[in-house]
Length: 236
Ligand code: 5RP
Image 1 (cartoon, rainbow, N blue to C red):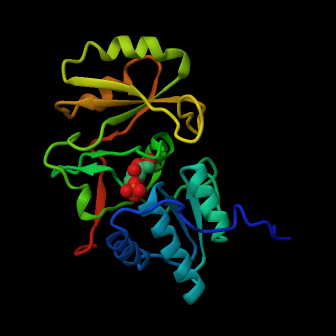
Image 2: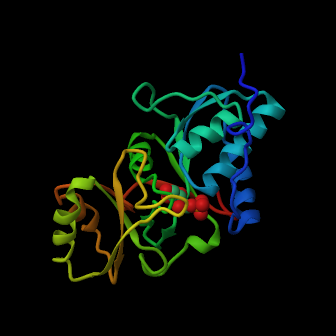
């Protein structure tokens, strides 16, 4: 029997979506690659939401069935609202996956995690045979870190240890504990961790691993060296 309540049944993003038209166009383009029976890894953020919606529209119009592996509670709710059946990464491997990005440079190095879902997003990227990154033109940068800090998810008990370690990096200019907007205190991730937003003057290719080697760092929003395929308005 289906629930008839409305709170979790409304497939809307809930906030203004930046560059919405471009994001919708690219989402529709990626949705063309959906095949019957696919298990699709679903990233987080507004672009991923619009892409999931485009996949659900194809299912509704053409009867192409698929299942999703969501990377956040936000996308779990979107899947239920759109009646997209879900499975788990620990149960099945995605045939392919898609996600958005906050920044991407000319070497396909990315910053992700504005939405705080970096850990499950990176797990999905690692597990997927093919990863599509869906972007609008605002995501291209000449210097990684020029518009966004790098989110670092940390175990709460490790906050002093991590802060002390980050002080040793001379390319780090600012470290901020991410605070919640509609709740007092810090943002708590899906994994019951905290997020530090770290501003860099320069990011080298080893930085992802250097940060991960700090005890208490669970994951970083640096995505460097992944064999991703970009989906933009003029290419697929
Ligand atoms: C969430 C993410 C998103 O993919 C990234 O923030 C892009 O968001 P949007 O599609 O809303 O521009 O990494 O953790």
